[in-house]
Image 1: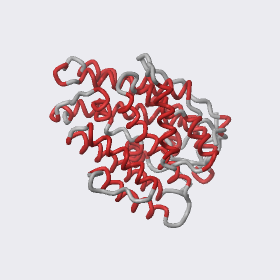
Image 2 (image 1 turned 135 degrees about the horizontal axis):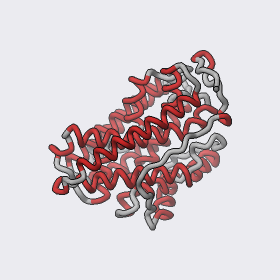
Image 3 (image 1 turned 135 degrees about the vertical axis):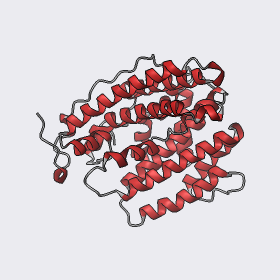
Image 4 (image 1 turned 30 degrees about the horizontal axis):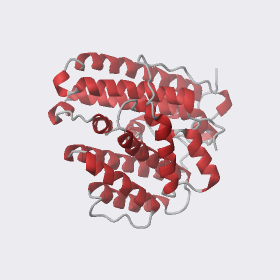
Length: 329
């Protein structure tokens, strides 16, 4: 058995010694037929706004295949709308990477000040000039497009989701340098925010041109379905990123949190995370069966979108991306 987790010397196991558990999801993954266009449009946009510094970062982005991830998540739909969501996703991945890797004094303050302007942009890109900051200019471009396509309700929910992400990112930044993971009770809402998926319903509606009634969206069982779907993505991400995080001595992932919580090895934390993935899958399937009969409220379209999303992102992790491999720069 691997050595017990020791908070004073995290982690005891090396990245090479960890065995990733096998994950599966009972739905077929499908890839958008124009995935190469989506991938190229994602990378070109990021480079065009100067959000990548130097050849090493560019190679990291190209190896990650972010655009292809979105083509797995949305195998059907208009390319321009899928690209907008892809740009939002890669924006936040890039933003989050810079937060995690920054140890400069005042980094959290700079993040908070930047985030304030980003919130103004999201609420009213027409009245908020982006300024010279490349992150602000890129964010302005994304939200100008969303304001053309989305309903007022969708925009408000997406803005709320971005605020959740910002709060989570600031919390993450303030924990930089702390050698032990946070308690599980803190990590769950933190990870929900950084997943950027609380507005998944709105992304799905914008791509497919539907809108779930507000009273349906707010019902507890529908909220449970959405939260369970987000959990599946977050757990999956944390399992596949664990070896890379271990190599970098980063502890903000679910296996490390579980190992710390249960005073066990990191490998055992990985296995616990896999069991949580299976439990959330079972819960998602149960809710899907119960809610899938409500056709007048567009719930079958939501369920299918979440199923395709989960199966697709699992294929991306297993087949495509190099982002989470320990050797990736």
